[in-house]
Length: 325
Image (cartoon, rainbow, N blue to C red; front, side, top):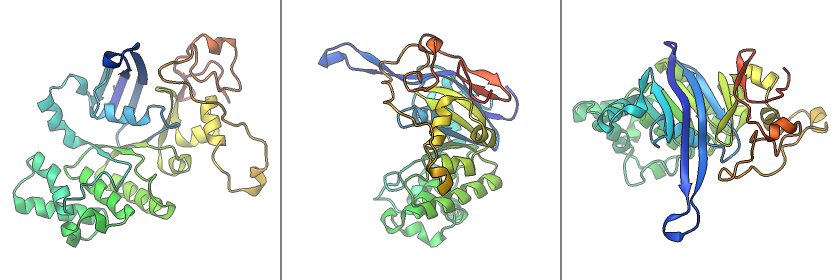
């Protein structure tokens, strides 16, 4: 593993057992994350995209060990997180943080902003009460809010301001790697742009590395350095943003992009491939390629053999018949 890799996973899985037990019936397994191998490099924004239920959020949480992996490994700067005991993992948590999707639900409504920001500082022994108050005020100013807001409650802020507070909380102890889990999807478009600009500025100032989980490809194109496309718990394509948008290799990637509305009226009327059909159940996966039931290019081999990720021109793709290749 190269020195500039912050987070790496190897054959990472997260499976959930459903059913069985008291209620009877056979137990079934949901393969939320199923064999993901990935390196995220220092100071990059790596976007993770895919339809709802594809495993994006679960993968982000397993990377932080907010959920335990079923098998495989997660490493932070070469340290295997899956082998750490609770004490060692808690010591590392200040370097590994998350900004949640919902700015309304992620802040305790009974706590003042100062208390919300002080909590992670105290838990990691930041310093005296005076030092914690000053650090909390600095964090607010860092995200574009006044230090006087420390005495306010979350309900006194707009959605965009609450998300800024959530970002400040994530940055409290000087993290290195931050998971942004749909962190702008609940905001108005104009506010989204402001928060994205803030995240970009903070990345430059603090040398942060982001895992940016989203379903919004327009945001990805603007914000991400590299993109990973997930389908039913697996990565099907990984590449640099501009290359992936210019010439997607996987049919699923292409169909996701074709589903994005186009502002150009001349392009709107053109026939475009459409992503059709229901996503197969993660408890009852089809044989072969998991996408073959929805793929307009599927052939016989796709129905029986699951394609492995393979390198192609600096990108990786899991497809028997890559596009543009």
